[in-house]
Length: 464
Image 1 (cartoon, rainbow, N blue to C red):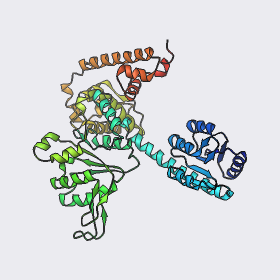
Image 2: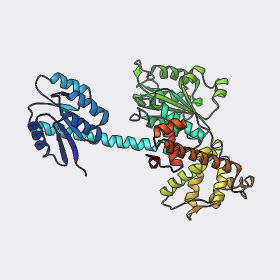
Image 3: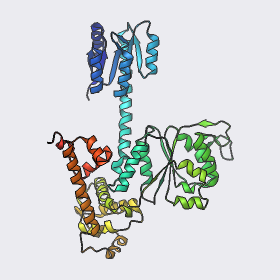
Image 4: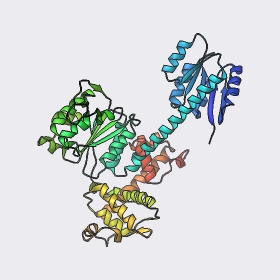
């Protein structure tokens, strides 16, 4: 276990020595005493610390300024203020600005130890919490939404742009395209990621029960309401509420939910109190939304409330260039899960899978690969491990010709694209910002292409 690193900032050498001696009695702690505030700021910007102790008043430097810098560069590092008599009000102001605690000079060693140990415990809590959040963010990040097609890259860039917004989103797409995965990815990348993600399938509840599930109820609100129940909307406070298959939502609930979304407040069934909550709404449907509007299945005012931003996920048959990537992704996933060493699929199997129509989209392909991995006892998956209904379509595929016109076109595009990227990197000596501007692409899109074509931009720095 590595030692905790504590930065001590004070212009008085005696105070630094005293603190260092007291902290040496705490196990697994390394102290870094600094008398120059400007050098301390450089360290805060360049290094990690588990806790910072700083004098509030120093010649030519204000401890509040160091607190501000610390919150920017080390937001989860507890910051403790030293304060002298007469500066208590400023110490309280520092607490309001994010300081963990303050210690009034002169102080007893036991007080310093107690507050430092408390701060280190909070630091551990934050590390555990945000490590978990990073894992969740990784799970629902772009690495798990696989695609290199132009349509999917547009979706990736849209997710990047809208994640920090609170605008309501409607995700449309056929069954199995990954609508909930997109919704979870948006939540995991947003400022609400520490809050709950509450999914609800609008077709899963009878109308008479759905209102109680959404809004909750008070004790005695109706027969059988023996105690208060908190609704799903309240549970989503501070997070994201995901309305899946929103076209299945009864019209009566659309009316009630419309005002709830707009006002961000609700009233439990049988209750008199309006309860405020703060939630972003993401909805999804596999239906043609225009048809749902025309036939009155969705109220127009409700539609405009939930559809501030629309994301349409194309079916797999419209982005077949993503199929090999998806196959590779699911092969690795299920090989690891089943503790098997499977290298890939043979050419015939790849050809069959790439030319299948996939009415069940990505979910169907995922199930097929999971099945094949479970059955396979070799290191290569062959067509023998595909189900009959997939093989029955084989006759419509010209398997004698391994390279199709589509393949040739795709290969030509990729070769030109890769050459253009390399030429641009050479031209701008590996300067990513200039290359992005030259290619009219975002930096994130650019890095995805570098990964796709196995290009290392660092090799082009100082290129002449």
